[in-house]
Length: 152
Ligand SMILES: [Zn+2]
Image 1 (cartoon, rainbow, N blue to C red):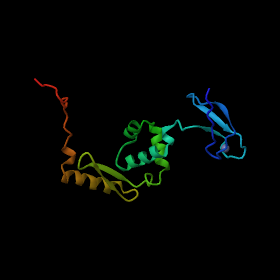
Image 2: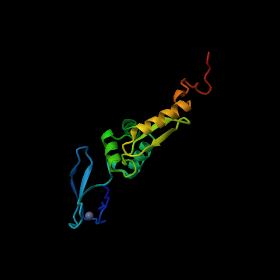
Image 3: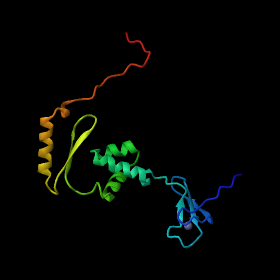
């Protein structure tokens, strides 16, 4: 038997008791300080969507033109979480229209416009696509031979 002291993450009190389990089986604890605002806690966040680094990546991906579903798949969080994070983000929720166009693969270029001026943003992006060739390029598709493999 090993004794692991559990500390309240809010008040650092060690007078803590077990307080049932989450639906996913994670142990809940209750701080016995009695003065903390949040008395029930988990030892680690089970929900990746609540991790600040993951939330920062959600915003960064959105600003680079990633959709909600590809962001969710890439970061292994739910699309609902992605849209909730974006709604709360001061960077991603300006509601200014913007559109991403293929550019300098694998990057894209983002055009931002004034509020409710979607037509201008789309016209500019379309003009960019016609003036460049990025939207007609495709990544090379093929199977790279394994090193040392003999191709007949
Ligand atoms: Zn506490």
